[in-house]
Length: 216
Image (cartoon, rainbow, N blue to C red; front, side, top):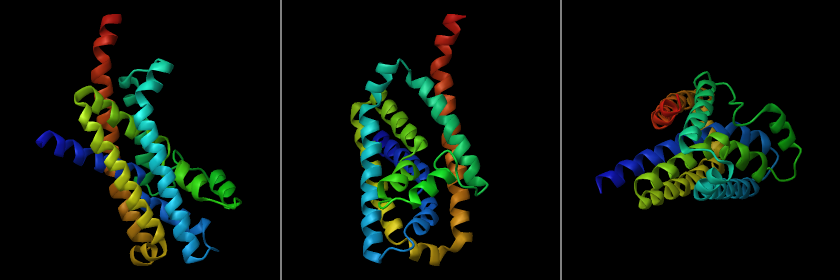
């Protein structure tokens, strides 16, 4: 039970920090500025559902993807950790994380009739870093105990629900926290994400080292 609770906390914390719905608030407000409150809630709902579905899908299919392309979990941990570290660096500096979304993608999304799927759900919420985190967590769950996959999927669902609440109330969140408050949250999340990224890299190197040494 203790192991389950610890892993559940780690999984929820990791998914929440890397998805970071608060970072999406300024983008959401910019992309939905001319929409009614009801329309904004509908966009937030669909974005959260699509993002949750994408992350859960990649989490479940991660092992199959590894087998098809011949990539080990250790290699994916190193690659995912490196990507998360770049994202964390941008977050700490309160710069728009280009590993999640670029200015071109924002401009392209602004011209779309429906921004819920692109760019809000993907790549803003369910971007490469989020996908890599869920895949790594699911890989760790399969390697230890299969039932640990349950808290990973539950974490995805909870973070998707939280993302909906944050985006649906984006105007209120922006008014209460302001730009300074959002920057503080982003820096704290970036610091935590950097720690998670380094841990992924350390785990990946630790798992890969025996194979590397055997090949020398």
